[in-house]
Amino acid sequence: MNHFYIKDNRLYAENFLVEELAKQYGTPLYIYSKNQILRNYREINQPLVNSKLDFLNCYAIKANSNPEILRILSEEGAGAEIASGGELYLALKFGYLRNKITYTGVGKTDEEIEYALKENVFNFTVESLQEIKVISEIAHRLSLIARISIRVNPDIDAKTHPYITTGMKENKFGIDSRDILCVFEEANKLPNIDIIGIHSHIGSQITEVEPYIEAVKYLGSLIEKLKEMGITIRYLNFGGGFGVQYKNVISHRYIPDEEDENKAYASLGEHIQSVISLLSHLDKKLIIEPGRSLVANGGILVGKVLYTKQGEMKKFIITDTGMNDLMRPCLYQAYHQVVPVTLKDTGYETVDVVGPVCETSDFLASKRKLQKLERGDMFAVMTTGAYGYSLSSNYNARVRPAEILVEGNKVQLIREREKIEELHY
Ligand code: LLP
Image (tube, rainbow, N blue to C red; front, side, top):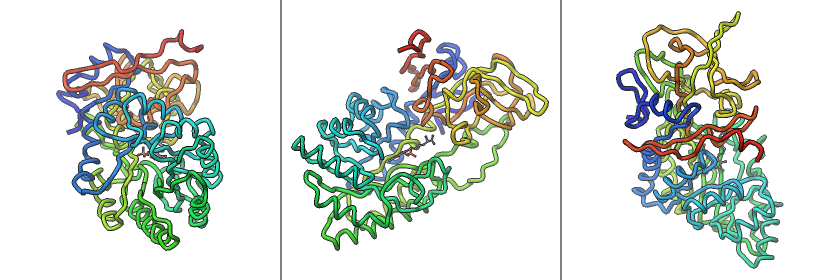
């Protein structure tokens, strides 16, 4: 059972009534479940341990970099995939070992590269020959060696939203598959560079295993070609991207069934198993970089209804939380289940659940069938533990929400609600 669940028509987070937590800490409020996050991590990690493969499981900390969540995963032994100097700072501060930190990104600045070299991160995933040359120069100046993995763009369709597809020709990520062998050859000649691996992250919210299988097969064939060229790499990194379920997360007789075009979600276990079976014969060390799959269903965003308004075409449920707290619906037309914290048999109405921000795109749910909600009712936006708070902003000079963590009977405030007086800093 998920650690967010319904009992006696009321929504719970581990042993707490969500409504009570929201009353105590105010809304909007992010609530995370420690046990759910741990369960997700172990579901991915244990099959790797059992497989006897040599591997690194690096949490993509961009998904949620709340210090306490970072700590939960570093204490479990996770490494970190970072995308900036800021994320390196956080990873080091909250317990990630340098030899488990891998640094990705198409646009690393010279200062960030120098910082990461001095901190001796385990790996730079590099995305252009120009970048490799800059890393080589800086490493040479500092008399350090940069371990790099070269990211290839394999032109594989991850079958996900175009904004979170990264492995196709038209995307800025990785090195074109036509050039990849030449880039390896050139990089191999550069001073202070140790090529340790090959990397491919083809996208996010991938719900089928086929694109991974295709990517791993492609990487396997590249590794063979590189071997013929006298370049032996030790690490195969296939990024993150495991998809999670956003619809029908909570089922109940008072909640309408949500039509899901994607019925056959691969479970985390299936995702990882499919890759393990392909990798065993390659004799390489494996790096994975899961983000969403570790934290998404470990968090919810709780809001409160401010007003209800009947327009000519639609009914609006106007709430105290919106696009600055949760950007995913307006940015990717992402779907998040909305669940009233107290379920009632009111029948359904079709509404748009919107925020208070001065933008038409400020919606949490559009044309959604929900029980009748009234001013003062609270609701949860489900599966918002990943890319929720981390994508939030102060737009409209709104303060960011508080974040709390529950674990059994324990609750902890893990980030205070911002105060308006802090807005000018
Ligand atoms: N590795 C690399 C190199 C990445 O760029 C990413 C995510 C990950 C790993 C982790 O991917 P995940 O396991 O979380 O799918 N804001 C978007 C998702 C952007 C993903 C960016 N890169 C969203 O809310 O859907």
